[in-house]
Amino acid sequence: MKQPKVLIMMSTYNGERYIKEQMDSLIAQVQVETQIYIRDDGSTDSTIEKLRPYVEAYPDRIHFRSEDNLGVIRSFFELIRSSPPTFDYYAFCDQDDVWEQDKLIRAVTLLKTKSSAIPLLYCSSTQMVDQHLNALGVWPKVPQKPLELHNALVENSCVGCTMVMNDITFNQVRSNLPSELSKVIMHDWWIFLYVTIFGEVIFDEQPGIQYRQHEGNVLGGGRDGWIQKWRKRVNRFVNGNNHYILSKQAKLFLDMYKYSLTHAQIEEIRNLLHCLEKNVIDRIWYAFKTPFYRQSLLDNIVLKLVIIAGKL
Image (cartoon, rainbow, N blue to C red; front, side, top):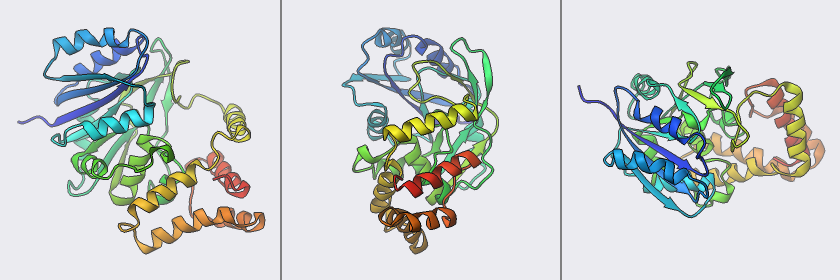
């Protein structure tokens, strides 16, 4: 039986400490035919030297290029833009995790249970580990609320390094890449948003990767207790780090796909954006009746507070 062809897209940047373990786990994937496209985002350590033996050992499977530093979002979108539209499935990959041998075939098997005529996206929980691969806990839990527009516009419920998409998702996103990447919060969030609206997301409660938590993570997992989470959110808000990022991405998405969205979807997105122009009393009223939601009670409260503050 012909094995499904999967393209793994990995962006690297100063990942010398853990890149070998990740590459070994990618090479070891079973029951799928894989190729690995790696874009190094201007590493200044020995990442490239660590990758060279793999490129030389697997010249037909590993495609590597070293380019200028663009940052994680632009680097992954560049991978999407430059990858060939000839594979059955496409997966994102971080540089410092370890994949279980059946990570890809499990994702493919679940994706095959759905209609192949629509955009599909697989994502899963992760087994969080410390820098030495000691288990810390499983995160995130299975979402209890629907993964659809009202969630995806204000929260990314899928961990990017677990994502596997079908060819329709990849090709549709690739053919209409975001026009202003500075307004995209993360590459994986953009694709999650696209699929929740135009296709279907599959969330697997079984972890397929060991998700390493260490001081060099671009984005960490869910180890923090509720006090730490509140403290971090307050600090980010006070520092203005997250001001208007949701509204900027939502407006960009609306501008790009308004001719594909339903009238009801357009009106709800516009209502969310227009609430920022209203006075605080109207924002309070909208925050309590808004159809948009996040998965956890804590994050949902934060969302309402951000709306009330007018900093969505």
